[in-house]
Length: 88
Image (cartoon, rainbow, N blue to C red; front, side, top):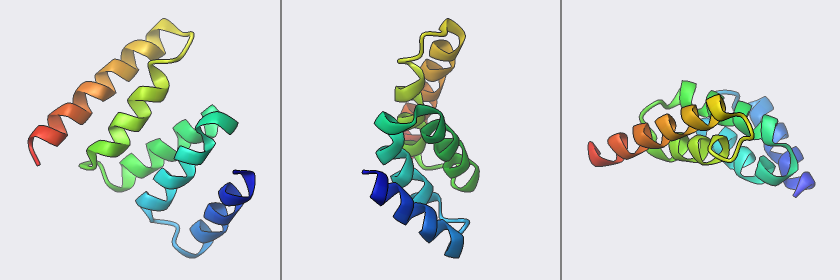
C-alpha cells in the first residue's frame, strides 16, 4: 500500500487539482496514516465540495477518533454526505 501511496503522490505532482486522486490516496492512507488521510480528504472536499463520497469518507474516519469533539464533527460530515447524496 505504501508504494501505491507514493504513486498517487507522484500523480499529484502532475495533476495537483485532482480531487479523485486525493480521495484515492486517502483511502489507502486510512490504515497507514490517519492524519494524512484526513488532510487528503479535506483537500478533495476543497476541490469538489459536492461529492458526497468525500464527506462520507472523512466523516467515517473522524467518528473513530478518541476526541469527542472530532467524533461530533465526523457525524456532522456524515450528515452532510447524506444531504448531498439525497440532493443528487
